[in-house]
Length: 137
View 1 (cartoon, rainbow, N blue to C red):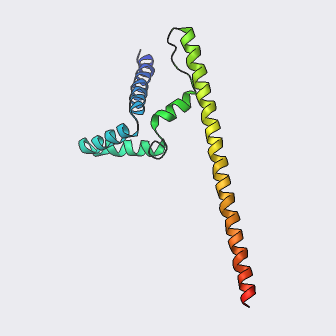
View 2 (cartoon, rainbow, N blue to C red):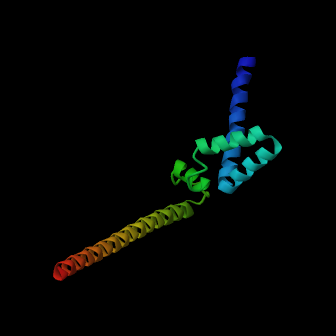
View 3 (cartoon, rainbow, N blue to C red):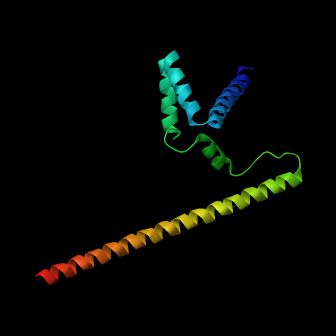
């Protein structure tokens, strides 16, 4: 009887931890930092453990926690029960992703054009200074 209770207890504890982690992720990095500070205030080893977990799981240095959660699950979303709305939502998300990719591509082309213009200007200035150096000699 104790052998079957131990896995159930471990599953329940893991469920509690996962629920807490998801709750903090939904509220963002600020919630994690607040939990860590409160942990240091009430019992410093808890704060230290939260800090270590935040660093180990890379929550401290990456973007928001909610974006990581969405990236981990892909674009799965809960169905509303209305298949027409769910299809519209999926189509809209796909369209927005396409627009975002097109915009990021545009920004990259814009940066490359600016870099090329700056490099061409540098080369022209360098040529002018070399020509002026030869003329004065």
